Image 1 (cartoon, helix red, strand yellow):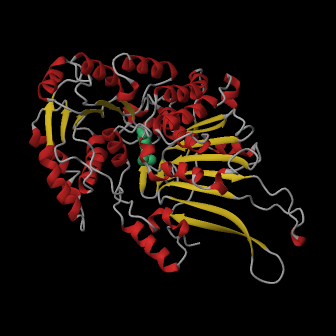
Image 2 (tube, rainbow, N blue to C red):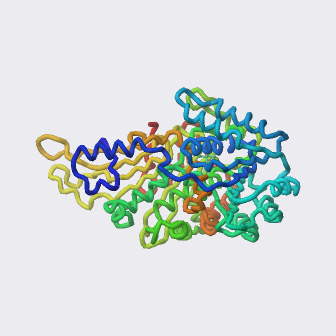
Image 3 (cartoon, protein in one colour):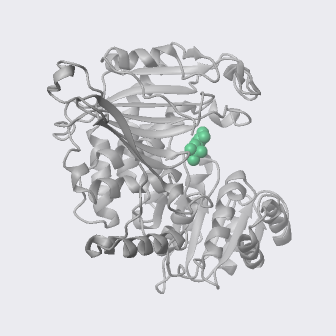
Length: 524
Ligand code: BG6
């Protein structure tokens, strides 16, 4: 079904012409909305020569510059361990920045030209005082310290920044810290890291990043639920049978072996990315859209995830690791043959879990989560399956099994929302047919150029913590997965699965024993 965009104002507009006009206005609006530029600030990026900065942060800054969201007097101070000067950073970024702009990218090329001279670079050791003395000598006013570095540096950098007075907010200036994932390695280490950081800076200064929260469709879950009466009224165990959350990837571990082997699929994806989706889907309506009100509700859901006993953790989880094989024309070595991975590694590259949320709203509704590398397609989605109709009183279908309604929230690729319904097939007599109402973002908006970090960086600069993880929520997430980590640490090995498959067969059994099946992964 084609879907038109109706603006909020349209509730009182009825003529077809006016509708078309409103749709056109909204579609041609700036991709990031018509926002004011963020306040002036120095963005200090630790890890300026790293992959994250080149692939995601700088492209996002270019998009923000294009949209006029970066204050003209803001600057970027890159800190890295590689020797070099400002020009080295600018040139190296160009490999992934200006040098890679395609045809029709004139605006982004202009944006890069204007951003380029604002980038500076200092080389230094994050764990020694020297670099902090240098930063302190040149930094005044507002600053964001962005830790795009391996997690072992998080605590050290925050302490050094505080030791050098760099986190002190004086004369109305803000000093904020953005911290990438993984935040902690398990429940105990996340708690210890929070304690270490919060001993030196206030929670209001800390922006724990989960880049899934920058994704448009993830944020849209709140709007879908809380701006649509017909959805939220049914959003509970009276009407919903079960919920599936999938983040399937085709990429293998590749060159990330040294990080991944000590991490695995569960730590890498579940307490952060998948739990962000789960908490958006399962939270109660917040009393306002203030950051704290939203974060309170998200934290409550994570705290309500049932903490399993060891036996329950074993029964409600499946872990897998891919074997050697091919996906299309890509040849993939077995996970255990990946460079920097131990040949006898028992690290999982796939995990499926059945979780329960012990609240009135969700009593008895299973949440099935799965994520894995080297799978058949890239597909991140939330599937909400409603209960079947209690009785099919269609004359020719008495007692027939009618497929249940489903809402499919497609996070990526091809962001959108669809609704599976049943309709009457045209003709004489009643024949029931499934039909899909399908809304795709790309059909209405130009969102293709954004990578999600634009929103997150803008929010840090403007002091909006809604899309960032609060300390208590991070710890609650880790507590919920700790029983699986503990159980797996006792022994055993992941189930093998072939690259390009849907994961290990046992993951299908996890649902089959409840009379269910995983939603088909689709390539769009
Ligand atoms: C990262 C994980 O946080 O998220 C990666 O470390 C994973 O292993 C990535 O591939 C997935 O993010 P996206 O945005 O590509 O779905």
